[in-house]
Image 1 (cartoon, rainbow, N blue to C red):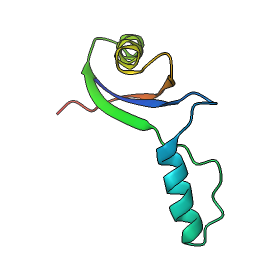
Image 2 (tube, rainbow, N blue to C red):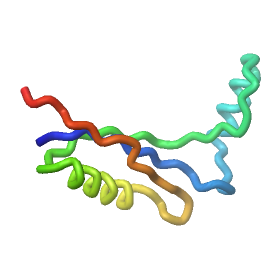
Image 3 (cartoon, rainbow, N blue to C red):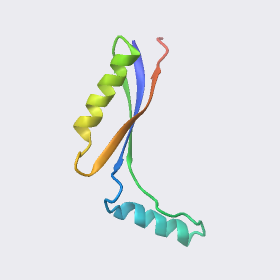
Image 4 (cartoon, rainbow, N blue to C red):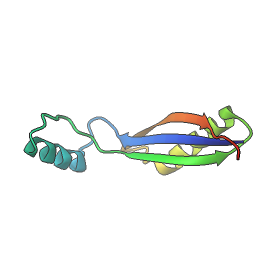
Length: 85
């Protein structure tokens, strides 16, 4: 069965986020009162595995492989079954 997985990878608290600071500056320049803006990565993928628990395990493996454990944290945001055609 196929599952849709969403993984969020972001910088740990305390790690300087220059891209987030730049976005914050632009937003403030546009008149928005945004503060403490952080920029991360969202990965969305389809996994072909037998069960939802295996999809979650596979998504965790992928996140661990792609995140830098010194600077980043990750979460598996969602696992949803896909309709078979």
